[in-house]
Image (tube, rainbow, N blue to C red; front, side, top):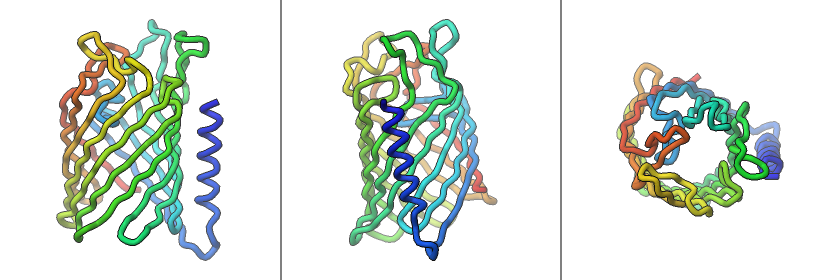
Amino acid sequence: MKKILGLALLAGAATAATAVPASAEVSYSGNVALTSNYVFRGVSQSDNGPAVQGGFDVSSGIFYAGTWASSVDFGWDSGTGFDDGGVELDLYAGLKPTLGPVAFDIGVLGYFYPGSEDGSVGPEGVDLDYYELKFAPSITPVEGLTLGAAVYYSPEFTGSTDSGLYYEANAAFTISDMFSVSGAVGKQTVDQVGYFVLDDGTATDEYTTWNVGGTMSVAGFGLDLRYVNADESITNGAGNEVSKETVVFTIKRAL
């Protein structure tokens, strides 16, 4: 059911994003990237290893839609009965209106794992696919500085039939055309007791994460160096700690 609802929301948003006047300008962009560690909300999605990523976006006025993909590794092996499929495919669409000094990003995101196989936990197994609703306002009080917040809500979080909520405060400052700095502090919660397994054998349903880093543009490439950490030592399917303090380097190329 959550797959059907998620796909329906994405299809509706994507249809709205393309239903623009013929005179409206349509912009396209794409990118490819290589990262030393695919970290999502403070937790490695690549078992602390590198990942290959890429995406494509289309926008027109306040409407946007796009897709993004990355290699993933949740540490599961054939002996566990789980298979992550090795790929994450995201689809998203939404609106970016403004109201006075406040810019908004209101959208829906679907996270899909083609090729993944459900395990044997529960009558329906484990479903990795899920979707989120996004609400993210931001302001630019002075030139170059952006202050923002974001809330993501999922009625059925990945691998669970319970809801998930992530909220953060973020900031970015553009120093020059070549260099900018940014950071964020966020909290992920899941309405399921013991959803996140910790390295000491205990479990929790929430954690806080933060990151700070800088991005430099050089010869058409974007180079990002970022410090990431979390307040809980979360483990993956292989028992490896995947929320540990780390520095992530990413190189991206616009297409």
